[in-house]
Figure: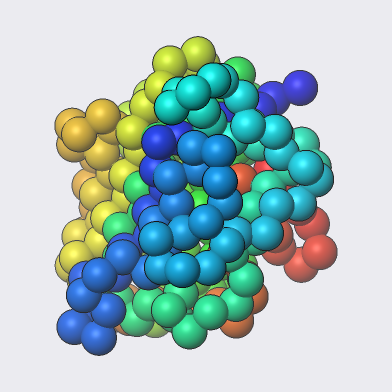
Length: 193
């Protein structure tokens, strides 16, 4: 089965004036604690793999992390989603970080067809950026960032693609009232992992 391993860090950051620091940073190196002082809830008993300081969290079908519903995750505009991940394969739609409902609310970062997808539901339209190429087996740093005008995807620190606002859309993210997930996306009762 397809799995995605996460390490050494997963971060959700908002550059908005009211949230000048990361709202979620988790090293996932043997613990589910975040730097913000709360623990992520593991679903499906995802195992830590590796030894010593080289541990990673192994997510896959039926295994994900739940960050819950927290006011910090309500991000109005500028956002950065970042994860280190290694995939056993890139078939399907491995999800990295999500707090969204497809084309309606929120934000997520995933891999779709071997490409990184950064999705933002904005007032007046949805911005979807597919960029780069992810292959199984190697650790990769995947980043989706939005500064209020342009969405960008970076792979291992290199710009893989960018896209500006769609005509008629505003740089305001439409909030999703549900939880933030790592390794899972949920839409109308369907689960994507």
